[in-house]
Length: 292
Length: 268
Image 1 (tube, chains in turn cyan, red):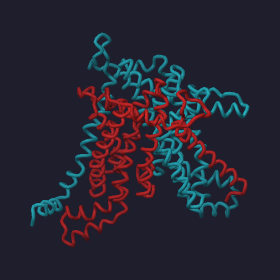
Image 2 (cartoon, rainbow over the protein chains, first blue to last red; image 1 turned 30 degrees about the horizontal axis):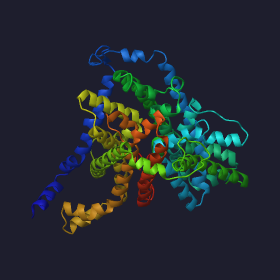
Image 3 (tube, each protein chain N blue to C red; image 1 turned 135 degrees about the vertical axis):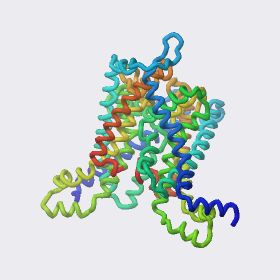
Image 4 (tube, each protein chain N blue to C red; image 1 turned 60 degrees about the vertical axis):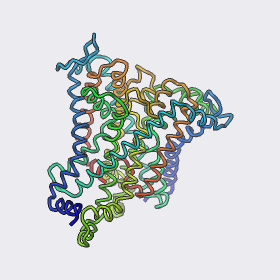
C-alpha cells in the first residue's frame, strides 16, 4: 500500500477522526471569530468610554443601558419598530397576490420567468437599488417629472420617513415573495377541490383553507423584512433627513464614527437582538421555520 | 378556481409588481449614459464618457481592486470552510448537529449591523488593526453559509452508494474524493462560489465596520452618494456593480436550476 492509501484507510476506520478533521476548521472559525465577537460585543456594552482620554474603561457598569431610556433613544426605537412592522405588512400585501399567481395561475414557463424576475433584484447590488430611489424621489427626479406631466403636482417625499418606507419595501420585497410562493406551491390541488365539494365559495376557501396554510410562509418572509429593517443604516443615512428619520441602525453607526462610543453602540445593538429573539420564538410557534 | 375578472386583476397586479421591481434598476442604468453633469430628467444627451472617467479615476480603480481581492480571498476561504462543514454535517451524527445549520446562518439572519459591530468590538478588544485582512474575515464569516447551503443541498440529493461503489472497486478515500465526490459536487461548488463572490463584492454594512482606512467599491459608492459628489461617476460605477453582481447570479441559477439561490434557504 502506498502512503496515501494507508493514510486514507486509517482514516476510514476511525470515523471520529474524520469527523473531527472535517468539522473542526469551520466550527473553530465560528467559535473563535464569530461567537467570540458576539460575546465581546455584549461585554463591551457594559464598559464605558473615558471622556478625557477616549479610551475604553474595562469596568462593568449599566450606564449604557440606562442611557437607552434617555430621549431621543426610546422614540428612535419605537420609530424603527413601527417602520419595520409597516414595511413587513406592506410587503406581505404586495407579495400575496403575486406569489399566488406564480404558484397557481402561471404556466410553468411564465413561473420560471417570474422566479428569475424575483431572484435578480434580490441579488442585484443593494447600494445600486437604494441609490436608484434617490434618483427617482429627489426634487426634479423622475417621479416629479412623471407626476407633473400627469398634472398631479410634485409629491416631494424625498428624505422623509415615507421615502424610507418605500425603499425598504422595495429592497426586501423578494425576501417576502419567495417563502410565500413556496407555501402556495405546497398546497395540494385536492384541497381546493375538497373545499369546493363541501360547498365553500372562493372567498370562503381563501379564508378558511388557503390563508392558514400560507401564513407560515408569510411569517418566514417577515423574519427577513423585519430583521433587515431593524438593522439597516444605509437607507436612513441616504434617504432620511437626520434627526426626524433616525433609526436604530444609523444611531449605532454614528456612535462608531463621529461620537466614537463603541460601548453605547454595543448596548443599542442589544435592542434589535432581543426583539429578534422574541420575533423568532413567535415565528417558530407559527411554523415559519418549516416554510423557509 | 378564479373567475375571469379575478384573473385580469391578478395579471395587472403581477405586471405592477414587475414594474416596481425593475423600473428603479432601469432608471439607474439609463442615467449612467447621461451626458449632463447635473442629473435631470428627461435626459437630453447620451454618452459613454463617464465610463471612461470612472475607469481612469485612481480612487475607483483602487477600490475595485480591493473589492476583487477581498471577494476572491473570502470566496476561497468560505469554499473550504463551508464545504467542510457541509461534509461533516452530512456524513456524521454527533451532538449538536442540528444546531450547526442554524449557527452558520446567523451572520446573515441577524441584521448585518450586528455582525459588523460584533467583529468591530472583537478587533478593538484584541488590538487588531483594521485592514484588508479584517475585511476578508468579515466577508468569509457571512459567505460560509452560502457555500454550505449549496453543497449540503447537493449532498442530500446524491446517493451515498456512489462512494461505496468506488471503494468496492478498490479506490482509496482520496481517489474516491477526486473521481466521484468532486465531480458530483462540481456545479454546486461553482455556483456557491459565484454567489459568495457576488455577496462579498456588493457588501457594505459589515464592511463599514471591518474596514479601516481601506475603501472597497461599495464603500466608495456609499461615501460619494453621501457627499453628493461625482454623481455621474456614481451612476456608472453603480451600474457596473449591478452587472458584476448579476452575471455570477445568472450563471449560478443556470448551474443549479435556482435551487441554491434563494438566499433564505435555511433548510434546503
